[in-house]
Image (tube, rainbow, N blue to C red; front, side, top):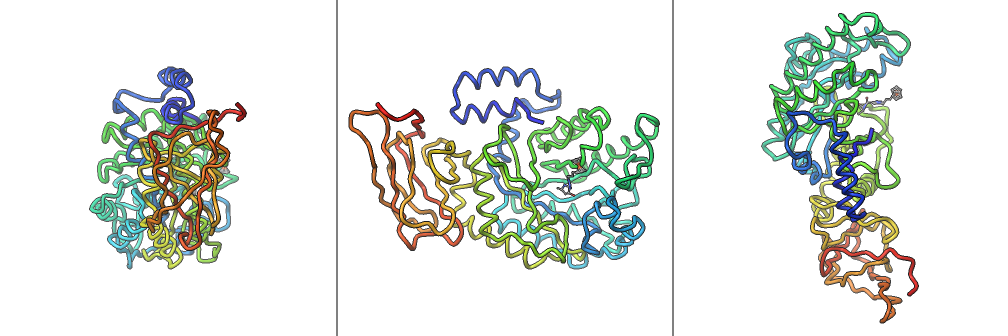
Length: 455
Ligand code: H79
């Protein structure tokens, strides 16, 4: 699922050539899945998301009671459905402190958060009026998890996202159930499917009205087609209530951005807006048996790689069933936040960096392209090289310390238009604990030479 319309703007940014951008803009007008309720400019609508770079994903649900796979554990028959649902009785949220969650998210530097309103198990994390399978009516928590969190996030100027599973393996009118058994086939019983459609769409309306998410994060679209979900209508329902809401790409072609899951793009994705969603250990929800935590260094290198390629990182945490958050999740968010305090200038409100080959590492650019940021992975000292930079350099500093760095231009032949190599001297002692960001201020918008050398 690639949206040509999304490609065009970034291509233009990427200086890939005016002509190809024009062709793509033309194509985009032919094929964008937009409707009359879409805002005039998708680019304007997407701007906060493009600038945000970091979001925190929260998987909180009854699966945290036993610390097992969210929904998939019963679907894949690791536990019976009845035993899975017994977890309802253990879901207390008794230590839930939405202000603390929001403080922690703020401290991480994230600009948005996305929380599960309903996973594939069908349990809603708010008081749904169309189903009793919700944590207010069916668990000892007896409270809505979403509203107070959104309020606390908004007080801190953090955008609010609602994860919503299209799949609902608990609903008696939903076809899918266990991995090897379904209730019925849509084609054999459209009346029953229509009942399910009315049901899930009324939940979307509820969430839109109650919480007004800035972003919708659908999941599970692969089980049915756009026609079966009525994806166009779902988009309209959301945008009619809130025309600037952003919709992720898991709506069978009717979303705004792509969502590679757990897998890291190797080179720059062709689509415009995208977001890597990734777990802090190997699981989305609370899973005490999983100790395979990513280190802050790993998360930060992945984060800078995503941003350098024009994407965001949506980093997941899985709180416990009582609403407390594990020390490991807290540690990661705090270390990430401390790094962002030192180096955030190189990340937030930037655009994707220069093409690979000019620098061996991730890069970003200021929006006007007059500042180039270079990320140094590991404890590099000695020198790093920039190739094919045509601009004059005004200054190079190390973010966080402000140290000015010296550089040499190597191999510049006076009469040739091929620029020399820039060797930047990186002394010992200026490095960041995790990833060092260098700020290279240029005499104008970045201009790159990518010819074959020679005369
Ligand atoms: O909520 C978290 C996970 O529970 C959910 N998305 C994240 C954010 C998720 N888990 N797995 N997946 C999404 C992808 C599942 C893909 C599969 Fe399939 C479903 C593999 C087999 C069935 C789709 C359909 C891919 C291959 C066939």
